[in-house]
Amino acid sequence: QVHLVESGGGSVQEGGSLRLSCASSGYTYSNICLGWFRQAPGKEREGLATIYTGGGSTYYDDSVKGRFAISHDAAKNTMYLQMNSLKPEDTAIYYCAADKSAGPGTCRRGGTWRSMSGKDMGTVGFWGQGTQVTVSS
Image (tube, rainbow, N blue to C red; front, side):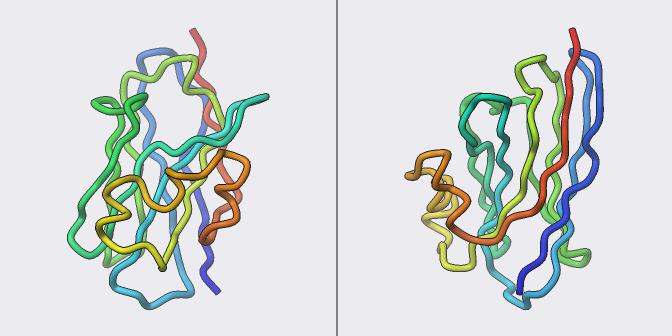
């Protein structure tokens, strides 16, 4: 059973930075598609970025491109999301997820999740419990 735990959330002023971590355990795949997502109050879950651990290819949604950076440390089995130039509209619960069935081509296009509605994304892969990020103006 894959187990994911997010950390690093908190409150920050507009323009500030945070780095989220997603520690994973319970799998031995060297290649897997990992992703970061968020859900703001009253809105559907949205995909932000994905990374394929076998090679490191990445995908970013336009809403975070140039501000957020996804990375993965294989030795620590931990994925990160560096978030810079934060805006109040970035306020949300942030989740990480892992999908062992998505290959590199699918992952670098945003994973299987990208073709799904926000309410259905949670049915694919394994998910963490989320960490709250609040950005104040």
